[in-house]
Picture (cartoon, rainbow, N blue to C red):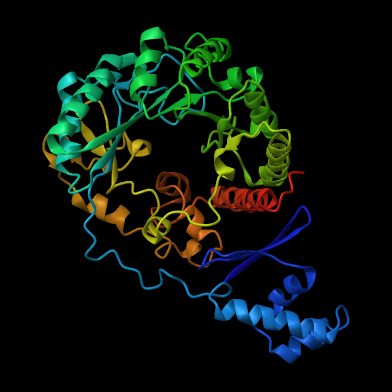
Length: 451
C-alpha cells in the first residue's frame, strides 16, 4: 500500500507499511498510480504520449529496485499480529486530585471538572495509595509516570505535593523513577505553586486558546469573566523561571475559530515555542466541528504549515505538536498498532480511587475497572482495550495513516464513532490531512525549503 499526494510543489509518496517516504518527479509519480496493477509495457503505452519511452523504462526500473528493497509496496509488518501472551504492566497513572474547577469552559468534556458527579477532592491517603498501586502493578518497568489532571489539580495542590514527595521516597525503596506532569488552567498559579512545578514536574501543560477574544469566548470563570489576562500573566511568570524544562501551551479550536492559524500566531508572538491546538470533540452545535467545516480546516492546516516554515526561516521556530513527526523512526510496532495504551498500560484514577481506562472515561460507571485499594476487578475492560487495534477496526485496515494515528482516540471512537472498534470519522479526516502537511513540512525542512 502506498499513499501519493502533492503539496506545495512536492510529489510525495509514502510507503504505508515500511514508513519510507519518497520525493519523486512527475514521471515516477504517474508511474506509481499505475504500478503494480499494470505490466511494464502497459505503463509505457499509457504514458508514452507524455514522456519518452526510454525515460519511462528507466524510471520503472528504479521503482522496481525500491520494491525489491522493501521501500515501496512492502508487506504489512503487523499482519497476523496477536496480543495473545502479551502481559501488560501499568506504566502511568492519570490522577485526578480534584473533581472541581474554578472555571466553567463551555466545551469542557469533564463538565467543568465534576465529570457529571458531585464535586470532590482526593485525600492524602488515596493519593499515596495511587503511588503504591502504580509501583505494585508496574512489574519490572523502572520508569513510571504520574500525570496530574482534573478538574483543576491546583485546587487540591497539597495532595499533589504530597504524592510527589511520597513517590520519590517509594521510588528509591523500590528502584523506580517517577516523572510528573501537571495540566492546569494556570489561573491559580502563585509563587509557591510555580516554584514547586518548576522543580518537580517533568512537563507542564498550560491551557490557552490563542487570541484574547477566542480564549475568553469559551474559557471563562463561573461569573462568565474571561481568563486571558490572568492566564497570560501567570504563564509568563512560570516560564520565566522554568529554564529549558519541558512545557507546552495547549489550546482548542472550534467551528467559531476556523482561522486557528491566527491563534497559533498569537501564541507564538507571545514568545511561546511549544504549542498544541486541538480540534474540539463534541456534539454541541454551538461549537462542534462538522463535515461542512472540513474544507476550511484543511486549507487552514496548509496555512499553518506555511506559517511554521516562515518562522523557521526567520530563525524563530516553533514546535507545533501535530506537525512534530519523526520521519526516520517513531514508536515501536506495538505502539503503532495498539495506540496510547489506555486501559492496560495507562489508567486514570478519580478522587475516590476508582480506576478507569483513561481520563476521558472518568464518571462513566460502565468503565469502572476497580479501585486503587482493592485493585482491578473487571479485567474484561482492560482486555477489550488491549485487543482493540488497527486490525480490529474495519475502517483502519486499509487506511494509509493507520501507523501514524494507531486507530485514533478510544474515547472519541466510543463516544462519537459508536464503539471501541469504530472510528470517529470526522477526526480521521482531520488527522489524515494534518499528517500530509506534517510530512510535507518536515520534508521541506530537510531539503532546505522554508517557504
